[in-house]
Image (tube, rainbow, N blue to C red):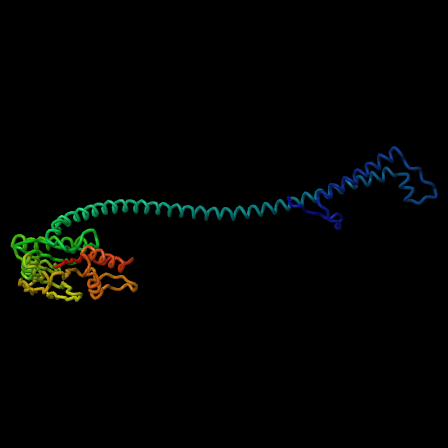
Amino acid sequence: MEEFKIKIYGIIPVTRKQFVYGYTFFFLAFIAAIVYLFFFPLEKSLESDSFFKKIFSDYAILTFLFFLIWIIIEGIIYWDKFIKAQKRIIENQKNDIEVRNQYLEQHKEEITSQRDEITAQRDEIEAQRDLVVSQMSTITHQKKELTDSIEYAYRIQCALLPPEHYLNQCLPNSFILYMPKDVVSGDFFFVEQANGYTVVAAVDCTGHGVPGAMMSVIGYNLLNQAVKINRITRPSDILGFLDVGVTEILRQAHNESGVKDGMDLSVVSIDNQMRTFEYAGAYNSIYYIHNKELIEVKADKFPIGVNEDEVGDVYTNNGLPVSKGDMVYLFSDGYADQFGGPKGKKLKYKQLEEILIQVCDEPVDVQKQYLKKRFLDWKGNEEQVDDILVIGIRV
């Protein structure tokens, strides 16, 4: 309860505690005076005394009793004023409490409404979370199935490629830098011997990843038929065989299937006795280096496949004037097309040529590691954009 005051006789402001102390003091004082005068009465007044002195002397007890009664009446009156003032304060506080209760009730309704809205949002979020968890589980399962399928496809693709011991037998002084962009690759290499010749091909199928790998199976089977079954060793004839074969397998004549996929490749045929080299290419040129001089032998600009008129293309067969110790390089476009370097640009064929000239005199295993390091240094943090295939053969 807050401390409040009332004015005695409209002049003196006092608190309730001050009033009680003052009232008690005067009340006890008058009681004490009455008791004293009762046992020790004053002397009677003389005839010569004044009226008030006679009254006070003769009627002292009655006078103090009168004032005591007056004090009691005044105490009752002022105490009632204290009670009324306290009631007013309590009433005001009650009104304040009611106002606050109304305010709290209003806020309670708002809070309840917000709580219901939050609960609804929470339920919706939980439902969405459950949906996301379910979808993540489905996606994880599907991803695992896809990953398992791709890894199995990788094992199949690796099984198609010639094993290392066979490569060493056919090309004892050579290297193959093979870096697929994804698990499976659209680039592949082919090495096979027939009729005293070693046939080497660097093939770049349309796309990379799974689509490229599917094309690589078609390309590898056609190369296998051409060399191992049909015993074709002339590079231009091998390209002609592939050109017709891809068109037939993919039903590209008259645009029957709508599939325009194919492959770019370079083929080199090596006479194992004479050590002569022949080359033919479809969009894929080759390099050979003699006495630190790099010579490019350009490919024909005819695609493999996509013969809507059912007429196969005729490819140029090139003899390579190489000497013992020269290097011959077959490659796909992945190495030169890689983005990187300080400005994030393509490496390009000019820089590839410079790299090959720098390293051509080194042992083939050193050349492979150097080419790989230069590629990774150039790529840096950039994403690999395509499959990488570089084949180096020492004459």
